[in-house]
Length: 86
Image (cartoon, rainbow, N blue to C red; front, side):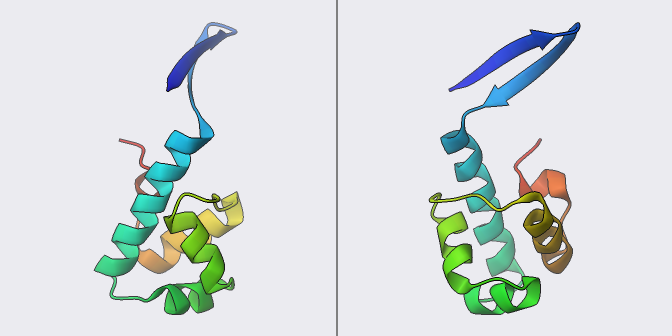
């Protein structure tokens, strides 16, 4: 469930961690498969383990910002696309 916070006259949409991890995990998996890469290949290209890729794709964990940049670069997508921002 998302909630809206108001701070200094800005409206901020706050997504709970599970909702966010589902979006980013699905985006990584879809883009990786579209690029024709295995989890092992993507992991080698971004400098992480295939276990980390699996955790992200299965909503167990989420990548940090630096990993998001590398994933987006390797998969040829924007950060917005990666995090499911519409």
